[in-house]
Length: 271
Image (tube, rainbow, N blue to C red; front, side):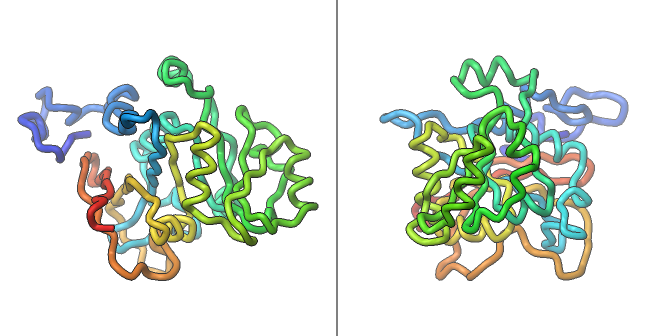
């Protein structure tokens, strides 16, 4: 892997058979990846919520192939996926993605154990499922055997019997909306109130679209996959268009085998 941005005197790949560029021609360690994707430090008043998204897209804009993201990913993309999870307090995901991709609980990673302990984090991030209906299979490992109790973000009008069924598994139901749906801004505040300020969302596209529309997304980690799929696959964010496009600035870019691993941060003045 090599760093393309910010540009340094070590950005260029080494000559064949040698060289010691910054990660070029070798696999980055997990510690190096963690440093490259570190969350911002606390503000003057202490930790503040920071919501980042991690998504993958093909060259022609597809976020999935055959309904899943794995076919357009790579081994390095999955290492970054695991690193981003290891840095987060909580992973926010839509109910449809849980159903389609067979989400499992986040696991504790020995490589990151000391780092998480030093940061005062739980052994693994909690999974927070955004669901209006609570129409989920509560016999899945996400609910029956999580290392950290699963959170369910829902609206105040959620069906009492579904709430009871969820809570029977040990999951925690968190109200983040006045009706049947979830308000993204309230979801971020509710998670922060629980001590979760390093937030990561892995989609799906509808949830990310809602977060974009609500103006709560601080950072996008986008893997650009060097593949073309055509078809009718969703983009990384769906739903109604925003009135004015939200401007993000490039924070960093890594490259390996044609895959681009980018970080974009919100330009707040554009809101």
